Image 1 (tube, helix red, strand yellow):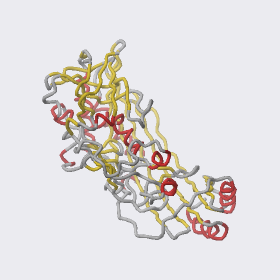
Image 2 (cartoon, helix red, strand yellow):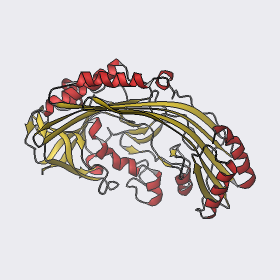
Image 3 (cartoon, helix red, strand yellow):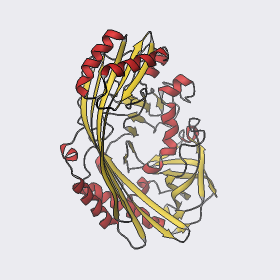
Length: 448
């Protein structure tokens, strides 16, 4: 089904339903993987499809297709049949309004060949090669087109590019398996400086990890690096979702305007950051994108909503609807920013001297956590976490003394974030999240 049939499909929705919206998207993905320094897989896939949502009799129905020869009337018939069994919901489709300008497409990313990406991978393999270590590289490039229309008059279309480069070293020494990874993600190809920073970060962290240190125990200061912050931020992401508010499971519902966290904690969702793979002029429901403060200097400011959760909560969508070809839209964040991005150009991965964002000084005994095992399990929305470390380092008298094995960290995010020990000067992008290292006091550290 071509995007050109969208207008005709929406005309039919106007005639046969109370309202509706449709999304058409085409995605082309190029993937390469190097294992042990050798190119193992390389390929290109392409998919296009349409998702249609209708409202009929006050009920919502959804249908989707990836069939190139699908008839619009058949898709509409299936959506209307779905609505007969659907939930009653007063969805307020957005009208026609100007969209913010944000560059999401980079021509030379879209035009990069498989050979270009292979050369990038081989260059990284060469730079990272080290005796006794296995080099693994993955490169994924995506080029997409998106178009959204609805019966209220909204119409949006844009093209986007994204490229993710993940590199890592694996060392086997008896029963000790050491894995050190890093990544570069954006809408544009990483330049030479980006790739050099990737290599430097991996090499510096590997050097710290070659020496084994005894794990500390007790309630200790722990630094979570940008890559190790997921366990800390995931409970906030879940509680700041309108879905959790509607379901009554959010720990922050009812706290808007209240000082809940340390004044140094701010969290913003910003789909308008230039050069990021998750930036967009509107969401997948046609709602214009805007920068949304969620937590500001420790004060809860708001939640993210799509059209469905906004209707249930009696509020307006914040432009955070995401949809695939099949199924109904759902809430999704864009670019999450912890703190502020002041001085972003000076931040980054850094080498050994910049490790942990300058937060090591003053720590008599503690940990730096770079990666955890099992994030997302347990009572996440309640804020509790308890995870073995995958990659962590002991800090003694302000110095890294070695890698810690057989240790675990635990605590509750809502308590720990009331007393932040410090934010590092190493703010950087990790996927679609920008964050510096974060020092938290009183994290429970145990030997396993």
